[in-house]
Image 1 (cartoon, rainbow, N blue to C red):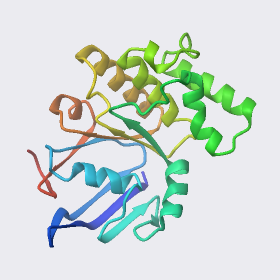
Image 2 (image 1 turned 180 degrees about the horizontal axis):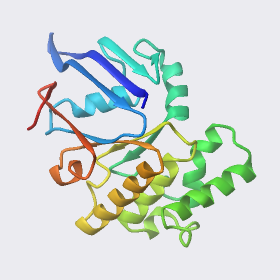
Image 3 (image 1 turned 45 degrees about the horizontal axis):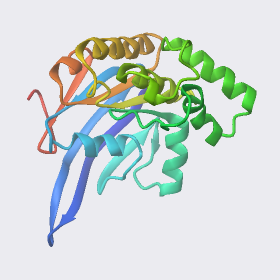
Image 4 (image 1 turned 60 degrees about the vertical axis):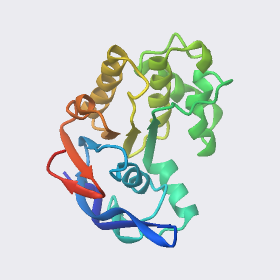
Length: 225
């Protein structure tokens, strides 16, 4: 398999009270196309900072980040935004759905930004909602759905533009154990279909359901926590 992500000596520093906070201290790892892995660490470990860099939401202070062979470490905000919409599907703990908008319309949103025509995006959104088991809820709004259903909509939306990989930030954090298992099952199925899945979590049970775990603590990778 070829590498979709290559991180080399990634450092991220933030100014703080006249000094510097070292959120990441020289992190290096690769992720192959088709992997299903988790990045695990406690609060303050640097995992959220790392997720932001992987997701092209932030840039490293130093080091090189190659996304599908392209060095994106010094890309402008506009260039990173294009990459995000084209290559990365995001799933968030808090769902980030439009509250007064139907499931169908929420899934269509990334395709609207990508200027996909109305018929094509409607058909694609219907297919994706069926894929996550919500074909009977397409016209419901988030307030009419359970947490598990909202996360299914979020997963469907993340697939809208057929991204190169899914980046899921604590995707089961607001769910009970049954719903958590269902969401992990959907992500596992997507991976078996060839999609690269990266989960950021602090939960051992969630991390162990992926095929590889990258542990991070105090801004450094570690063999285990």
